[in-house]
Length: 233
Image (cartoon, rainbow, N blue to C red; front, side, top):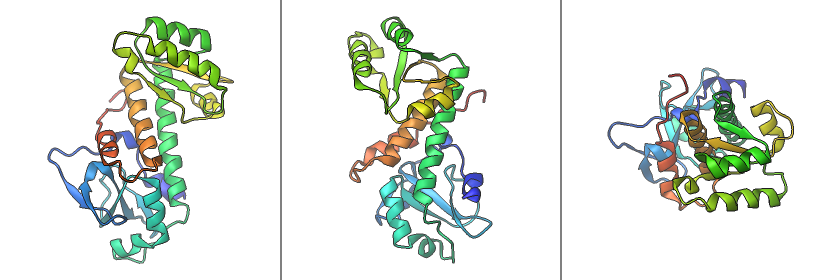
């Protein structure tokens, strides 16, 4: 899957067209806005690769940005028919996509930490929730629930717009350790700011990809079309 990683791009830069465009999803056979879809092309080695930035040359096919639909397309060999080529579709394409989206979000979290927009440790997070503009609470998904409930309740008690902050539970403590350069990370607060928004866009795309409800049409469109620039760009 090395070729896959080389040709995939960071998802939060996902293309937002000046005018609405639509394409046919090869899994559902429905026409949808490109903001709800992922594009795939044939790479140099003849394998199907994602074109998440919608810029790679050659004929492309489009699939609604849901993991179960990518799995279905792999199972039904829809890529080769849509691309009209003897394209090799890696059996682990859905898993590889999931890893790419997950790593993209973790990379953005690391950038937010380097920019000083991440608070770590339960006591410091609790203080940040009470006094600062918190964009999200990040909680290790393999952690105990009690501390998370306490912080979430404190966040809900805020009377300003910070109470609309998200609660992110997509990553394990080990993944948070690596992203944030600390040991035993369980709770973190993401402060409002540009790099935090970049992380939240990538996290929403990951959550959308993993969503099970094929009828939730609006979610992917809202998330994939959030055009948040890269830090430093």
